[in-house]
Every structure is written in C-alpha cells, then in structure tokens.
Length: 149
Image (tube, rainbow, N blue to C red):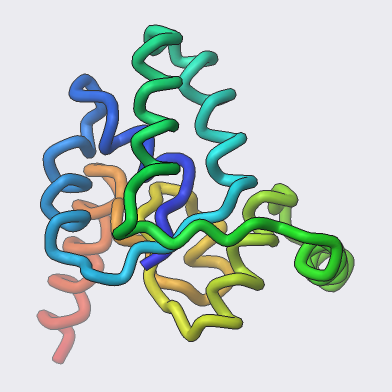
C-alpha cells in the first residue's frame, strides 16, 4: 500500500479519529511505500493541525529510518509524469503530491492507499481510511441495493 499524508497523520496522532484503524491496517500490510513529497506534506499538515513540532520531526525521522517503508525519492522524470497527469485531469483538484503518488502507485502495481483523501478513489485506487459518515453512507447504499434484489 502507499501511505499518504493523512495516513501518516492518523498513525502518529492518537487524537485522530482514524488512529486505531490506521494502526491496524499498517500492521497487517507488508508492502509499505511512500514518497518524499508525502513526507514533506506530512510536516506541513502536522504543523497546521498543531501537533508538537518535536513529535512531528521525530516521527518523520522514524519513517526515514524504517526499513519496512520504501521511500520513492521524486526526481525530474517522476515529477514531469505527475505534471502530465495533472494536465490530463483538468476537472480534478489533485495536488502535485497526489499526482506523484498516483504515478508511483501505477508504476509499482499498487492499488491501495492508507489515506482519507477522496482523490485516490477518483483516480481508481482503494482508499483504506474512509470517514465514519462515508462508511455509514456506503453501508446504507449497499443495504438499499440488497433490498431491491
């Protein structure tokens, strides 16, 4: 799975609603990939959400040192491919970080992401962390469809 910014935030913040679920998924998954753009975005998100700076930096250092996480270091070619993807999706509000993740996932045959970001769904990937209200809505739709049969 690719670990996105919101996935890392959920893993590191015990106050996050998805913390326990993120930990459970993380521990069960043996393939863990992220990008240096995600790591950059994580530091910004943690700061914006008022996580203690030292905790954020320590967590970031742990990720860099974790041999079970492959970090894709974005070079010029991957960056250009991500820009091309953004040009092909003018109707979407993807960030460059998202586009880099999508290209990296396709290159590696990864279909799942530890994220709450709906853009992964829009691009055809499986988002492993859905907000509680979304999960309830999907369950209600599934129940309604089942009762129609």
